Length: 260
Ligand SMILES: O=C(O)CCC(=O)C(=O)O
View 1 (tube, rainbow, N blue to C red):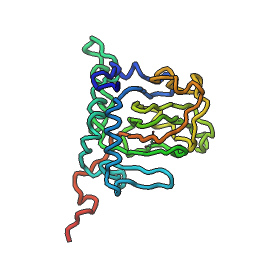
View 2: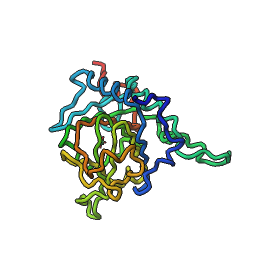
View 3: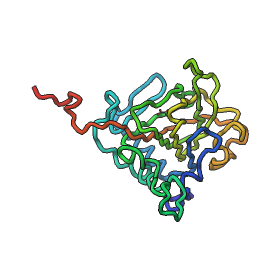
View 4: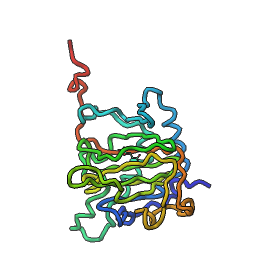
């Protein structure tokens, strides 16, 4: 039987689900949403009006509440199906295990968005990856507060983490791989956000899936599906939640509603 939200055993703090083998800092929660919640979100993604989809050469994506314009977001609420359960649940998880020491600064840092300008994500990208399709290595840039929360739906795949050489060229081999299972939450922040690139290979099958090659091996829901060392790709949908730093309350700042 599928887990209900009350049956999900969320960690008491993100500290306990930190991916220790990675540069600072990433957290992985294998069971962040239930199967029922996963299906409901996938239905809403599918039911979005056709113009919501932006078609790239192989991948398609939706941007909620809208695209950025010159790194700015036009103030608008996210739809409720992108807030609940993901954002509401995310904000309940403390970063650090609480101590009884009232002067402990860590006790005040309540959740992963406590230091962000809007105290919560205000923007969601929805990417759909059919088998064989990935995303080029890239950094997410300065438009966002440096925290990315990715919920995976439908299928598993490996996210590759890369570093640039001193001359700015991309190193050919990833420095690490994170296996993202359906219904999982991956949070990347700190130097991992600013100094490293991330990408997904355009392959039909992830190979060499081993304890020594998968950074979050110990945090996976189950290692059984990968016992052969392979993961045959199926269509995966990801939701990436971020806080856009600059939000414009006035459409006319963009020249959208200029008076004649
Ligand atoms: O789908 C993912 O897990 C990665 C998405 C991504 O790289 C991005 O939105 O910048």
